[in-house]
Length: 72
Image 1 (cartoon, rainbow, N blue to C red):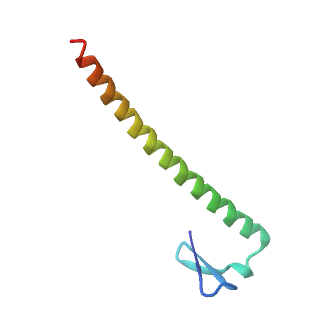
Image 2: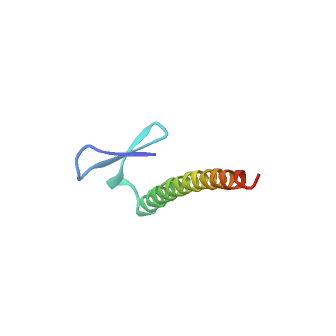
Image 3: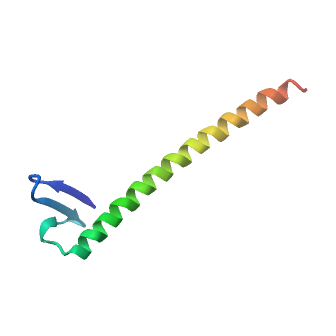
């Protein structure tokens, strides 16, 4: 899904290769578009969170490895 604007009053939705004037769509469709945008934003946020957790886990494992070397 990609939303582009020709001007600020006439946004165009490009979806699966077709273009639709957002102002001409029903309220129900506009709500579905909004829901999809929110879902995409949430997915991006959680993907970023997973990346940070992975980096943190690697860092902690490296710290543990270094600390355990001192016990050998």
